Length: 251
Image 1 (cartoon, rainbow, N blue to C red):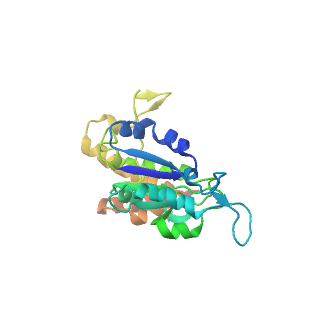
Image 2: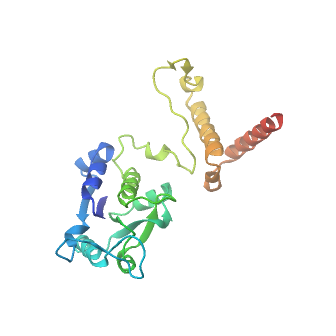
Image 3: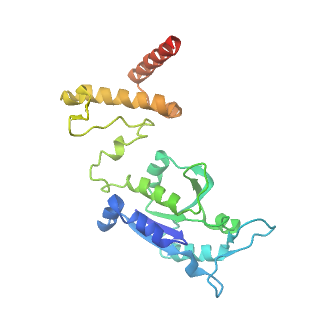
């Protein structure tokens, strides 16, 4: 997977990405990162890349030409047009399914805006999809780009030390992950659930599945609509709902 980030703050991207798991994956050649400073493609002597918006209004808008030239500097070296994502609160909501989808790409270009946004004409020219990481506004697209790159990288073979980790993270099958425990067996009076010490793998897997269902029902019930549920899962949820409704009546 090759990431190309068009940004006004390349150091921010490199410092955030070339550490921890993703940094090790870069060292192994599993991932590559290219940061392109849009300011290097300024078309005026003062190296400005923004100007006042037509029609008036507060703030400044990033100009089309520097952004387009920065993109063309990347695209001209690739065998085919790369997929271009623009970090925007107006875009499609990023989720685990999208991370898996993007991991199938060989080249990803992430465009980070600043100020009041980017001239619409260049977005129409080069961007394939606008992507949002949530319903809020950031000062720039760099943090959003790092979030997307991190999530996508986990889906690339060899990046995670344990290949099963990506399969059982939160949001696998649209369910939240079950609770995890490590040594010591008892910590400050709190013991690890006995089932995890039983050595009975089938019972452990059943308990973990039920805990995932329980957590999803309590914390993110909206996810259950898109979850791949078995008959046993649905039975467990019905019994859980009956139990919860019984407690509500008691109170």
